Length: 491
Image (cartoon, rainbow, N blue to C red; front, side, top):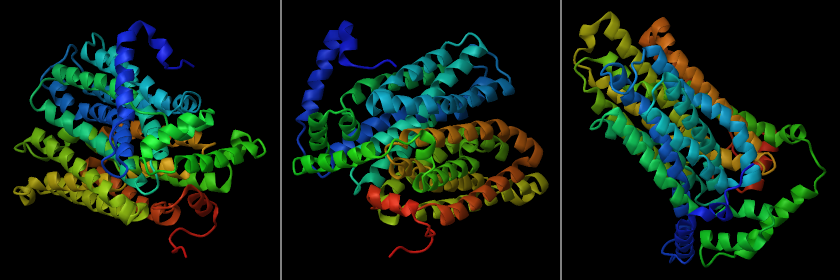
């Protein structure tokens, strides 16, 4: 495995010196408000997720421009563009397991920095593709980065944040993902596909230098035996009033306790009651996240609006949906540590179900009795906006927040890999089956099917997902190992 270290950058000595001076300044940054540096580090890591959001948001505006306006170097069929979209989640699924290994051996920070390279190369291939295979490869490489950031960024944020703001900074992941999609939707309204690709690639270029200024997580530093560095990092993250030595000693005791336990195989570690409960909850959550139809809806948003009405401004409608999605995640950032994870998930799933039912009714009437919806062109925009807003409040951010909370350190990387693999494999399935579903079930039947999965998701959360708001790691593990059902109040 290749390490990203300062010694590897000797040919770029001037740049290294400049970055080192920036890092020194960051270490002396005045402390103006509580948790300041934790917010800074979390936002810097989440900038990488913003670049992934632009990858997710690319297909909705690019599809009509490529297929109908003939933009780009290639003439694509609908099926070829569908595969171009689908190669991204394939890449995410493939990257999940190797990323888990890298997180363990190379650290959280270096893993995040490493995947800047395939992400940037992906944009280069998409921009100057001379054959369809170059577009497929470009999206596949972007998928590698998307899968890697989906697991590495939540883990990084979970390990630098204390429990009082863990939910808030954890929601930065979905917030920046949605901001990236909104940027892609908005920028595409004024530029062509080539220019959109160039802008997206430039935004990726900025991420590497910014994140190089951030520290590795104290937990990983301590695991590698760098105790002094871990104390310094924790002081920087928590602020001058933090008792960093005490926190590091407690973390050291936890890690020593794990090391002193009888050696377990990976199989035995995964099959403990608390890990099995956590895996059930997380794999269930990412399954219902994808089965809600979110990625199919976002990837084909412009296409859906074109089918809904000829007179509707499709680009503006898509931007409105992106803006509502961003607003929903912003709302989640302020509520996730107040309302709790379970309530947000259940409310989110139920209202998403209602939104799908409304969309299904609209398309059913549009097909069978168009006169009844002649003055209701605003309804699909409203229903989809409500759907993405509620998704962004609950099922969007919360599963990724909880991935950083529920797994023990010895299984966190592998368990997160399994959850990420499941999410992207299902994303691929939903992306490739969306058009066949619309052809077979019709628009109405497809949205009603998604609504049914949303309702099943609410029931799953009620039965199998624990509350983690405001709880320490030990409290969460005890709750997961308990046989007590989650919908009964804790005393």
